[in-house]
Length: 201
Image 1: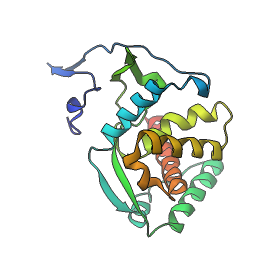
Image 2: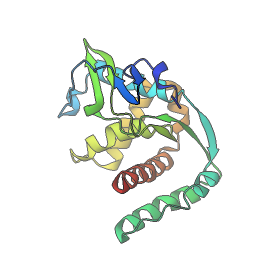
Image 3: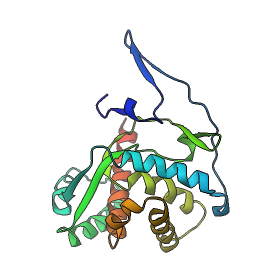
């Protein structure tokens, strides 16, 4: 209700009755390709439908310096994560005068949660991580782990995502021009925060 999810076509109809939440069963097929050649046009189009819709909801712009202030509570407890997160924060500090875009995000957008029927997007499930994050969070969260598990490197993933945005999300292309590394650093921090929150729960 807070984010008006029922107005989003691919959010399953949800009802509340006597303290119980009911949700319409998702139909469609779950499909996770194993090779980049299996990323067919209709699948890539359906992914872009999700990102396009969510990135248009609760849009806002924030200066990187102000975003950094929100991270004061971020204190990784182990040395490895502390080193990684501090490296990413350093990238933010080097770009503190830049502005970044935030929007509504699913928070756990991946193949397992995407249901397609007759080549059309039917439902996206598992919305418990929904929230406001950097506008490219869902897109990066969808593709980067898939590529990493298949041993693609940072430059290969970056080139794929920039090309994907240019072709399938041209309205967002100007936002990431010359800012990919910055958006990636923020994505990594936000993904860490999401996982840390889940571990605490």
